[in-house]
Length: 186
Image 1 (cartoon, helix red, strand yellow):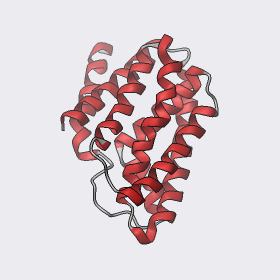
Image 2 (cartoon, rainbow, N blue to C red):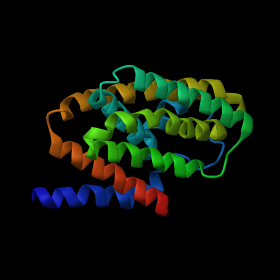
Image 3 (tube, rainbow, N blue to C red):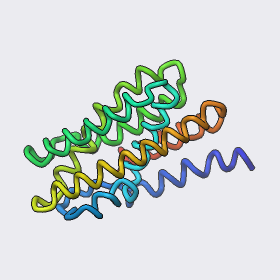
């Protein structure tokens, strides 16, 4: 039964990947509440933030990693608003899940891989800047940064629990990789 669960969860995440990607490329975010909801309604964003929070706990980068991730997302949003989309943006977003997943599977490489997360979070923020409606950019951005901070904190709390549970940590890493693979394939 345990082995079946280990296979079903990543497979389910992979099947759900295409319809729940957060970045559709359309201007549809207008207000603070849209920004607050966005990180929780886009599975790629949700998993990146939770994964980064987990890595912050596991790698000992308590505040540095979450703060750098939030700063990168804010800078990315402003750049996306000013410069528009770039080729490979969605690939980098999926790449953030690959890096977080591998980091959970390879504890000896967590610190190095965790350092990549803010750079990859830049692409998440960039996509938000591209998608935000011009009139609602700042309220939306404030909302997604605040919600992202809460999800990073939740991931950090989960990471503290995962320190003692290597098998669950590996399962989470496999799930992130499965979702990333489905996102890259879609």
